[in-house]
Image 1 (spheres, rainbow, N blue to C red):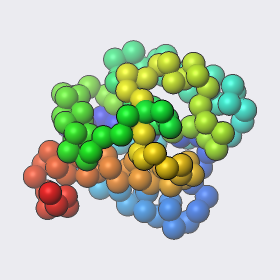
Image 2: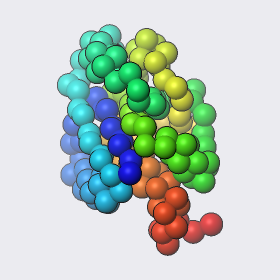
Image 3: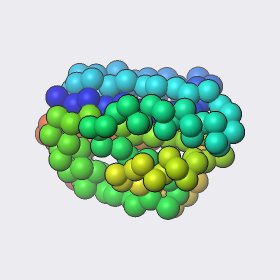
Length: 147
């Protein structure tokens, strides 16, 4: 069973993107606990402080932070990262429109990039949910992923 938390800055405002993200989040709940924690928009510093306050309380979790300079992984390698959690909580952090405070990035066990391209934080959230679902589907032998 998985225990996954997605921390995001700002709400999903685009109805189409929200529908897709919600669908993947609903699918993920079949495999364990999946929750989304949304923080209000603010300055990079104020957003960062709220994120750090949350992360500092989660001492056992593996922290993945989305960042431009992060590593890109294939879906199969990302699935292996998920498998390596072995029941440990994972927290995925997506910053706001202006990025993340460097102090937040410093908390990462893994800096992760979805692509060398830049996406809105709304699209990044939907894409990350899809990739988490894909990774878990790979681990469970689902027909969702085609090699």
